[in-house]
Image (cartoon, rainbow, N blue to C red; front, side, top):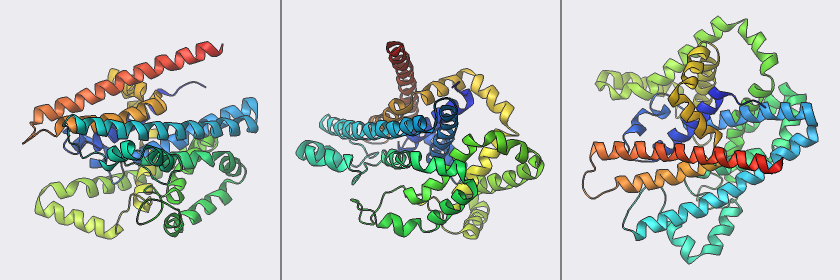
Length: 370
């Protein structure tokens, strides 16, 4: 299957944004997606992941059959689980090493650094069973669960799309109590990213990828109205995210906008966050398709696409680099703006180099299979 450059670029941007967002005193974190919308890179990552699942599933099923597609994604779930396990161990060891070297950091809970040395078996077992999800890797734990059910859910989605959508929305509606019932280390119970809620965004992405050829001709008949509605939603989301920064009057308007939609909970996937990213997706895919393609062809766009193609390797790297970058910024006293920006740029550069390595590794792996 041919790669879609713009899709890879957006996946790469999501990873860079996740990395920058988790460096508390970074300079560039003030310019990531979370500052201009009511949603953030987590929604972008999950939606794009679902879209890719839909694309790949349809292609594999058409050529090799449904069973081949089911096995492909079951194996992929196992690979993501291994990445979560490896990432959790590396995260704790990195945190321990930084603390031993005199580099305090706040991006990750430092108890992991103690547990990996004092209770290594217990740490690994609780990580492997998903009873514990280290912060920064919790979205990967969500991804493991969503992918593990893909062999069962996607055939149902493809055969009964409307019934599946109703069931998915119903599950979302009762997602809070269901998640709380899951055994977990958290006092509240359940995973931080509620899988019963976030599944609706993931399956929306799958439907977009799987049914795009059938859906787009129909939707394009109403592109003017859909674009107008999407623009209003995105501007509302932008106002919620930005207005509070511009003085008392703008802050009052921002407060009113927030009160109209009520509390916006990220972890259960709030309706406003869901609607906002779907609206933004329409704008990116239709009226802004040409500018997006131009950006994807540019040097920065290709660099981000390289990061996006790195998959699990670059995901784990972005998590580790966010901890390392945070430690490098946490110097005694006030860390200068220049130093913090330099660390931001350094982490992005290193993540790109990891993407280069991941691409080379992938090519060598394919060559050995021939």
